[in-house]
Image (cartoon, rainbow, N blue to C red; front, side, top):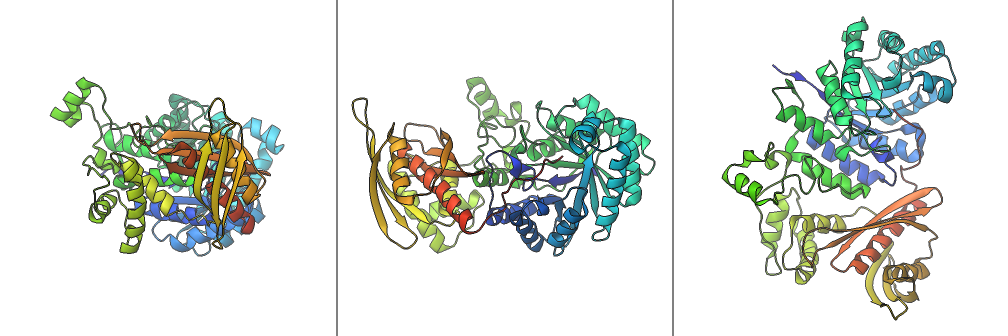
Length: 516
């Protein structure tokens, strides 16, 4: 019988540390519920000591998640551990994840302590955490560049102190698969009490090797993989959950291992995280990218039509991508819309369908055909959890190479009042943003603007992502419309609503100390 590999998802903690990613508590809860449906074993919900918002998020996830272990990160500091324990006290399966750097570069330059002091701190942290929970994971930051002999000494000591999971991270993404696999094997063969703990791998993608290194780790004895949805995370990101799970599933001849993941929930989970964080999934992304199961070459198309496996090593339905499509146009009725949304994994009551149908008709009137990606964007716009202080109602612009770009906008506030104002700018989008600013009056700096077509064709739905900065905080906004300028205005107002929402009730997205 195949051995079990546990999937530790850190999307809500390490993934949220992606530059620009920002999740409020409601969004974290929505993702946590989906991760539970996906079948992950552990959800690392946040870093409770880092901010009141992060504490609230871990506490809220602990209350709703019943099937997964809920984990809170700490440094090897008693106050951190006390705070995490308080946040996790309502969890059915709580885990405290604590640890310390183990490489000489971290000990000397970041922590400025000796090897002996680091070992002592680690042991004390584990003992303190065990006063609260039975499940304690210990991370050894920067293991990939550490002295393997010292690494084994620390591991032996913290297991003796009560650690149940040992996290051996390649924090900087420095290792190659053969090196990292050998390190895991060395630990498994040279730590006398290693059988009392689960060995975990946590790899970063600085050299594009995170998935390969994680798989090398399990081939050499690790039985937990720490990963994120879509591979988001610090710098170049973390190990991608979809990639390692499907690699083990597809290459059973190479990996006689199994996970508890319901792979048919992968695509839905990927899109949910992308929508919530504002981090787009690149089209050629393995497993969940828009082109992962697309064939443009005539030779490929001929082969796939005759026998799918000629060019596809994964059945797209196994990851939640349904090949069959209902062509939706302005002549489609509510039943057709509800049926297609159900096929995509969404469940709505009649009132919600009626509201979505009106938005669908407006979109369908502007397009020849409405695609699945259009529907997913439509749903995300209609079901946003951000408090809508301002709503963009109308946009009108005049521009050209001989004209001064001018925009007139009408917005409605949450009290129902409609306000119209105009302004000029360097271009039509700039003019729209200046006109909105004259009304909303929320100081901010636009630091990023990106646009992509959700589907093909001249009538494609434009998906605009903007990031604005207010003080040290960054807010992401997204908007979609067949008119690029309108989509840009919606994205900007979405970001402003997040800024205003946080100003009223601070969310969980304050900066946290560097993690493994």
